[in-house]
Image (cartoon, rainbow, N blue to C red; front, side, top):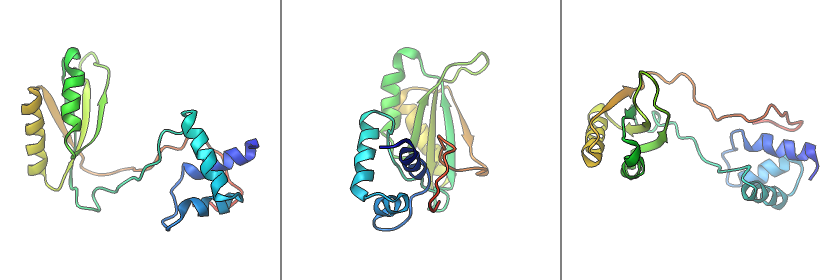
Length: 163
């Protein structure tokens, strides 16, 4: 595949998909290639680990998740796997990351928890705390969404229709 075609495909894949029954066909048509060629290239990107996943971004506030909390936890290094496995078993936990402990910030596990109310969110946090036996944590509730977009990995422009 030539370099400009490759760039067009990457550009299209990193932007919003059309909300239609056959989004890959539309993307392929916009680029000017058959759908099976697009899909074969996506498989190649997946196999060489350039493309990890394609996922939907849910606007959680629109669907009723009004309480959204980042909870930071101080987890002993030797318990990270055990504790994070418990945390990710909760369907309300959308993200769970390990981060470096900083000089004046001793939290190393970060979870994002979503719920329909602050009370239910607090209950989930307490359940996680009890199940993991981790009581050293801070809750940071979102107050306003300032930006929500997917990461763009190239400034490649397409000569065809952009979404």
